[in-house]
Length: 291
Image (cartoon, rainbow, N blue to C red; front, side, top):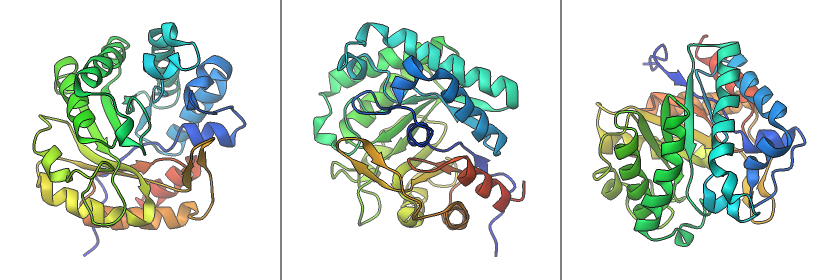
């Protein structure tokens, strides 16, 4: 039997790698945050393009607007201002293209997603994530989205901060290790973390290879049961220590959209794209959903 796709919620795709495709400097450590300083118009166009492609939500460009991240290039004192700018840019795009779409406030790991051992201790994680989440809530995002969480203690600290600052209006998505389904990048079984999360609006997986996603979704669905929506956002390409991400076209939009159908069959209710995906990817998914 074909899965029912009428209720599937469609997220947007990548921001940082799409800015890179459009010629914006996304060099580390600022990554996509540099766009607020140098190319806010391009950033708004990216958001608009995702909405026009069928996305029902846009994600704020706040992946690297923690004070810790910005401080590495001397912009730490601009953290709150740049966070609010990112929300304003996403909101303006949403209001212009689809006022019914959601604005999701992105919250990333404090250090590197793929190097969970760099994560600060739990107290620092709770304190610093609280700062960003309070700023996102103050800027009136519709939902706080903890993304690419790869270590158990940071995941739980960020979840506790979100539960305190945005009760009922937060969600979390994990970055998992390749191989056996359901293992965080730090080696912790996902089952252990999910059982201690609190009350997220949904639980998801992001920034793993699109081709590996279906088994991970199936495992996550077995952990959360039928009452919690499951999200899936795969990536295309691979990480790089110097430039952040290497874009490839190894999985073109039509192939990605076909993989998404497998995720839905495995139990995903919410789908979208992570690093390397484009508005064309989201359009292909939208078309495959019959929209």
